[in-house]
Length: 98
Image 1 (cartoon, rainbow, N blue to C red):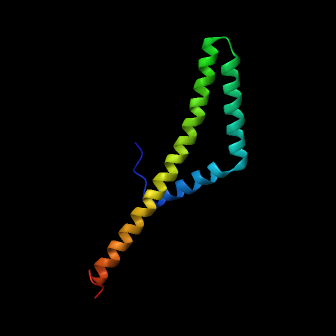
Image 2 (image 1 turned 60 degrees about the vertical axis):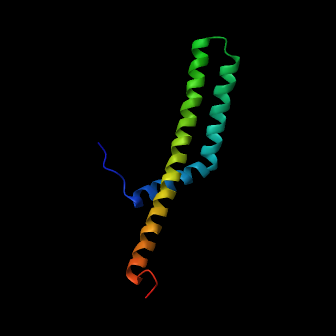
Image 3 (image 1 turned 120 degrees about the vertical axis):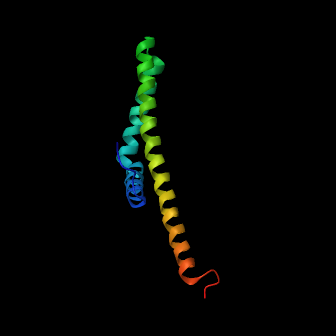
């Protein structure tokens, strides 16, 4: 079993996922594959192959969704770090900044 990721690790993973999601070559490859699978699924008369093409589309979308989840998780981790830093600052200064 993997240990839980630290906030810094989640942020690093989010940044890497965001770079991949913004990478033009990867975006193009996803579009080409998804369109090809969809075209084959619509044209193929064999139900078993059609199901395989649709499953492949779901896998592509699942990977993209996972990367999106990583980005969101990293943003939440960054917010957690900022909130903790602000709370520590308030604790050091006191509630009224004295």
